[in-house]
Image (tube, rainbow, N blue to C red; front, side, top):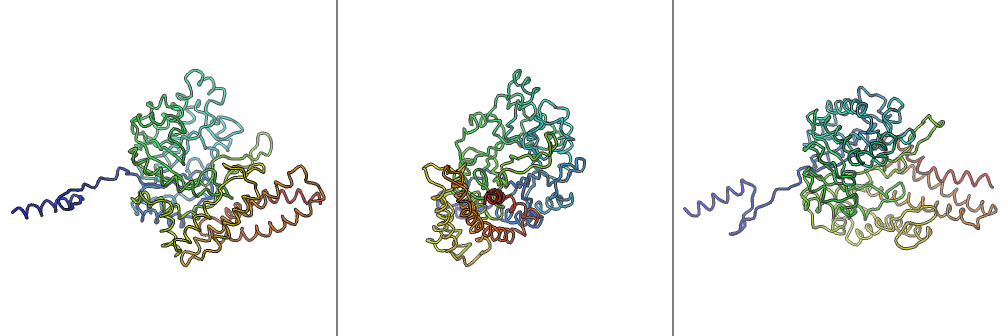
Length: 519
C-alpha cells in the first residue's frame, strides 16, 4: 500500500510539472518572464514581407511570444495617408503578417510614437500645429491636447483594427524638446516638467485604455521626471531599456520599481555607437549576458530585445527657410540579418542558458553553425571585438590614446583574421562579418586620408598623392557595394540598398571632388 501511495504521489508531481529525485522534492519555479519579445524597427531598412515572416518564424521556434512592431512610415493608415512612406506595406500585408505571427503563437504589438520621434508625421505641414518646434520636427507639443487627442485616437483606432494584441506601445522616450515652445515653457514654469510630460502621456494612455488595450511606455523620461508617474492608469506597462549602463542612468531606478506598474526589461543588439562602419559587438554580448538575469532578479514580467536601425535623429534638407524637402536618418547600421549570432545569444540566454559566458556561447555557436574549432572561434571573437572605437574630427574616441592609423591597423588585422577562417557551413551568414569588417577598413582608410589633409602641413602639391589613394578606395567601394546588395537583396528593397550604399560612401565622394578641384 505504501509503495502504491508513493507511486501515486510521484505521478501527481509529474502531472503538475514538478520534478522528484530520491527523497527530495525539487519544485521547478515558473518562469516569471511572461513576455518574451523582440522589437523590430522599421524606421529605415524596411524588411520585405517574406524576410519579415522568416525572421518571425525563427523567433517563434525559439520561444518568442511577442513582437513589437515599430511600423513608423511603413504602416498604411487609412485616414492619414500622408504618414506612409514609399516602403509602406498594404493593409492586407499587415493583417497577413499579424495572422502569420498568431499562427506561431506570437502576438504583434504595434508601437506608435506619440510624443517624441514623430518626425515622419510632423514633417507634413498638415500637422504643423502639433509641432513643438517649426524646424525640429521630432516632438509633438503637449500643450495642444485636443489636436493630439484627435490625431492619436485616429491612429490607435486604426492599429486596433489590424492588430489583436491586448497592448499598444505609445513610445514616449527621448522627448528632448520637453518644455521648449513658449506655451510649454509657461506651463513648465507653473506645473513642472514631470507634470507637463505625464499629462500628455496620461491622455494617450486613456485613449488606449478606452480602446480596451493596455498602454506600454518607454521608461527613460519617467525615470528622469518621476513625480507624477502615478497619474497613469494602473494597467500601464513601463519598458526599462538598458544598453549596458547603471540602472540609475536615467534617474532614481528605485522609484520606478516602487511605482506599482508592471515593468519589462529591454537590452539591445544594435544601438549607439553602432553605425555603418562600427559594431560594438562586445558591448551587445555583455548587455545580453548581464541585463537579462538582472531583469529576472528585479521581477520584470517581460523582456524585449530592441534592434535599432537608426538613432531616430534626423538631418533636415530644406529647399528654403520654411520648405522641407526630406529627412535623412543621421546614423544607419548594418541590416539586421547580419546579426544572427546576437539574436541567437539573446534567445539562448532568454530560454535558460543563463550561465554561459560570452566565450562559451561563441565557441558553441561557431562549432554548430560554422564548423569552426575552439581556437578558430576565439580568433573569430577577437576579430569581432577588436578596437570598437569611433573617429571624430580625426581623433579616436578611446580609453587610451591611439591614432587613426593604429585603429586602421587593428581593423585590417581583424578583417584578415576573418578572411582566414573557412566556415564549412552557413558561408553566406559568415560573409556578413567579413563585409562589415571590410566596410570598416574602407572607412578608416578614408579617415586616415581625411586626417592628413586636415593637418597644418598639408599643401596643394600633395593632392595628387591623396587622389591616387582615394581612387583605389573608390574602386574598393564598388566591390563592397556589390557585396552589400548580394548579401541583403532578399532582406531589403533594391532602392533601399542603393540608398544605403550611396549614403555610406557620400563623405568619401565629397572629399574626392573637393581635392580634384585643386589638382
